[in-house]
Image (cartoon, rainbow, N blue to C red; front, side, top):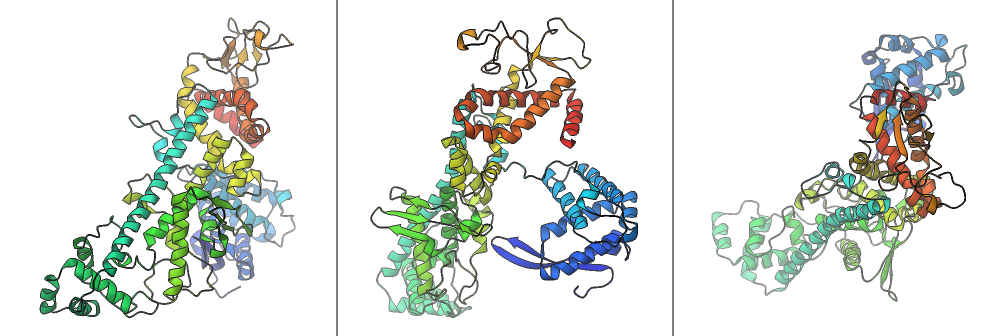
Length: 629
């Protein structure tokens, strides 16, 4: 254990952020929590402190433990259990403590469900992996605790423009409110909306790259125009003198702006002021000079970066390239950031680029992405990326052996050792510059994955596109299909068809016409499965196969009478589809679209209708019991 005071327990941890790893020390203050020195929880914390010297834990893990102790410290019963001596510790006490923690977390509406589950998991993990000197067995099996917070799984991942899709705007239809006649029409309309949002980002990247190319040509043209020795003599005084005299300023003002700019650019070139280790230099009213010389630019472009455009890329250019390639590849930002120069191969015969990223989590490369000659904007982005790397070698900022490519401007004049972390961060300035909706770089991957899935109707194709080893991982990226897009759309569109057809019968009173109803299996009932209107479409058996119950406006024999049995059926059906829809979709796309999707739509609409009704509390009670079992 490293040196620490008696009441302060230090744990070595690591923080991973934007492709970098930071060492940290997280501190547990026993006095602040209200824990005595010989308490079993203090022993558990000291053990993790000792282990962290050789194997550091993640900050998210220690944060979860800290949050759990913070919750338990204000509970009288919990703090009493926490302060017990290890010899008095029992599995029953720990079971009670875990339950107390989760009940308190359930009341924390300020925390997301995923956050509550992680806090509970971290604390239980700490306890189970600690060793105590007590007569009672302390293990996962002896405690036998089952969480009441639900399975530890990620919440549905947000797509681009989620906030705007959550509400309707005048003439615009949000993704969560797409009017539709059937599942296939919903998918078709969803593709259009998803593609439109992604295209807005692509267009913004192209706009930045085009603007930079115009500026670069203007800079090169200005630098190559006829030089004036007398003008350069004046400008040198401004470049190397922070405090020009009034005489210098008067001489400066009478010079032609284009001549001034030409002098600046050539002095910077001759004196190698853009090279590694260059001497310090300043500029006099450079933004004003660029404007006077005709180099107007979009707000956000750094003046010095513009002056250097003839010899290297600016940050805005690299950021636009990064975002554009994310939109094209569907990789996560860390994989693209890890792409090196030897992962970019140009095929001269076919005129395409083959690129690969690197996945650090699995120590593997992403699937190759081929960018052919017709994808001019993407090919241009790659060429600029390669050119910038070569230029940085010429400017001596990186050695010729350097394989990494995402280097941008820094305030240092020394050789670059770290790539630009800013490229991986949320592009707030980019969003503001183009008046875009707020988004994160991670959401681009979700959008590309969703589009691939909607377009190909294949989870396997999407898995290959996203580079997942397991198709289960791909499912996390496609949760929008089930839990976001379809649900939201059917809530607005399909529930309108149900409102006048639902009968609540919570007292289980036999009403006229409901004596011989047959359950369909998803919360609805059939009034006459033998005499049905679809006999001509069904061969063999006379009894209806329940294939047309929810297509269009539904079967006229469909009855929706709600009691506790039907609510239980609705919940269990919903849970089944939630966990198995991806498998059903992959097994038979046509059958899913024609038969299963309408059932999912009906079931989800019925669930939400009941949940928002006066009997919603009954649904939530039954659901809690089912999920706990």
